Image 1 (tube, rainbow, N blue to C red):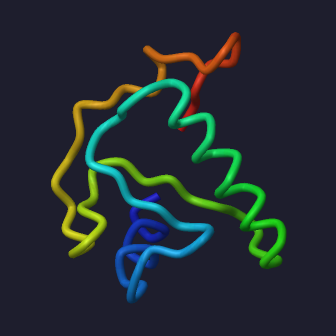
Image 2: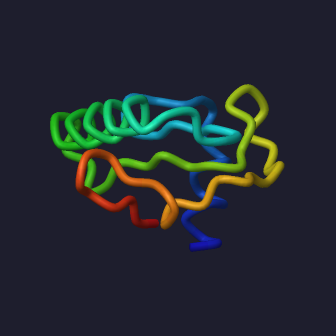
Image 3: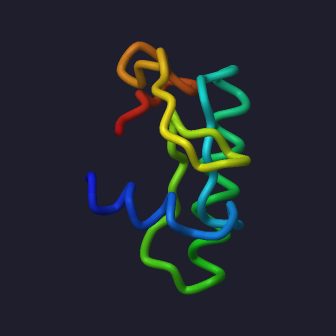
Length: 81
């Protein structure tokens, strides 16, 4: 995981398949973002898409988060890291 994070924060900017967030906002928003990122990754022939919490999107600085995926659901689906 650390190696993946290092590669992602080294990118020059967010993209259609990589997005950085500080904290969680709402179940609806995360569902939409996960869907959009996974669709974009597939269209761009990327093996994975990434929604990374705890990173500033402007600077890619690691700042941490209070978001705990296991405590939230989108519909009946649990969020997993």
